[in-house]
Length: 373
Image (cartoon, rainbow, N blue to C red):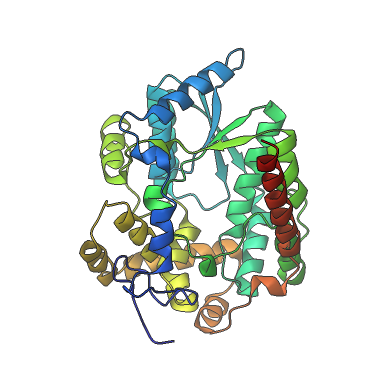
């Protein structure tokens, strides 16, 4: 494929599925603009204030108004700060998958203390977590973050069900995450895929690692337990740079580099493994999202891309840390990284057909519901 880069954002042909229109604009920024949440256009943030009022009303006679997943990154940390200022009683849930940086751990402590938020840290069985992470590495599938992400969602939702909590507050936002190329990832909820990859490449039995089934994810959680995910950052004028300044001043927050670098493995994945082995830079999508939202210009993004995403010294430190944790040799690591082999997730058992059937059924039900009005 001939190299091309979008004339509006900085997405390029490192995404093999990218499409350009007659103006040279890519499908990613076109879709991001089309899908901009209407709540971001509100002058007085009515939806945000309604959400706060609703959470307080629903939280009556309960210990907490809501549960917030906190990674130690800027988005979720600022959200915790913001909601605490609104008087919400928050239970922060942090999932420790064994990759937390020292900075992110300290940020969590400072945040909990300064905002008076109860923080519950759930630690994943490290032997099992590293065995699964190692299995993914040797499987050479593209979404190497699945072991962390799946554990996060599974533990979070299982805890919410146990505590009969209805609202999960997410720091996910349109401003910095409106562009996420499907070709660069795979469904982290697909437990069937996870189990098959581990069956072929894992060494020990996963007895404590948390799984969330297709039925739980698509039926039980939204329709039986009626758990709802809310994204307050899509209801305000969110600017991560301004949020960082506030967190530094009010909480003593320490910046950790760039988006998702609060995890050592994800930092190495985005700064070294993905560019060198898989041929793309995740920051290209993050920067493109920020261009679309007006936070930075295309020229500013191109200048950032011209600079290394991380120092060689830090990358070497991260490699040493990661291979020790996963119990693989440097020779094994380098062999996998330098290999051009990439295995499609769909070569392993998966929930794709179930998901397609579910989406068809949901479309039919929506049409019938509209027809009955």
